Image (cartoon, rainbow, N blue to C red):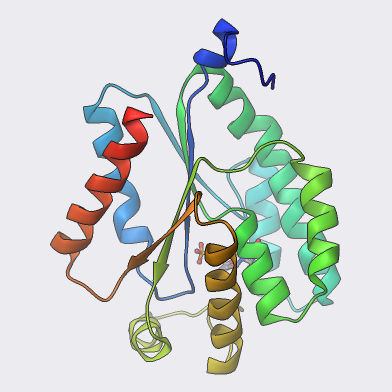
Length: 215
Ligand code: TMP
């Protein structure tokens, strides 16, 4: 991507929104709503997810969510899925002028593999610089809830995957790392209080997204 804002191809670029939060934070409920908002403003929207978003990424997702592995293997496979997602979905969509919504991106690796599993953040930064040296989401919506609320929501789920079966301390560490990153990147990451009603959350999301549409 060029940094020359007078370049017409840059002007055509769409925007990239990621959704984040610990399991049970309720982010997925709002993805369709935000996609609908953007479409109502005439944007063409590509909705995707990580790990996943491509045939290879979905195969990696299946392995990642169901097999135990070394924490570095887990981080590397997350970024392998992301590299494919960047090449096959995110970069082409943004170049077409589409808007991209991804259910999770690199902040999840910092939160889960870094915060949750305790992997050295410098290793994650190295992978981040390798896989997407230039690109960051234009906006990250971080859905935040206290741990007991997330646990109650998860316990209502019938089959829990490998991550969802983790103990409270794991999610506490993920949440701490998410909130640390939100403090580190306040221009990009907006913390959304996800304990409120769906209607209230939608009003907040509408205001945030409309601001991004004006930029
Ligand atoms: P999902 O349940 O939101 O679809 O996400 C799948 C799981 O993968 C979730 O528990 C978080 C985890 N995950 C990581 O541990 N690292 C990552 O980089 C990503 C994208 C997801």
